[in-house]
Length: 85
Image (tube, rainbow, N blue to C red; front, side):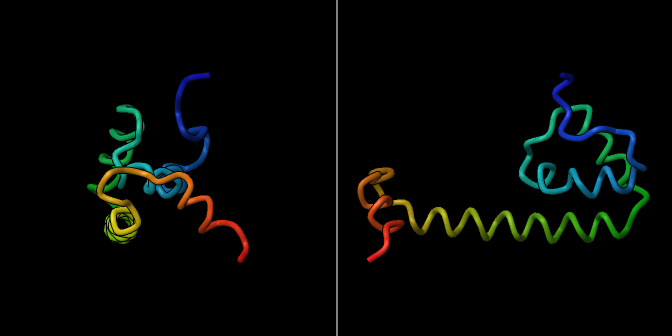
């Protein structure tokens, strides 16, 4: 196993599209991040899609922050919210 998120036999554009969510959240290994950055210089569609991914990631992080109590995760409260009423 080489630690890469996807197999690179796919055409570059398709590979970058698959990597964008991880790139937007800064979770890619350096070699995959470099591939994405090189492709972004030439591909307007991927730059647009990356902006959307970053907005989506920011909204998800904001939602998580709203649900987080100031003193950390209350496991019992979280479990109770998941259980049927």
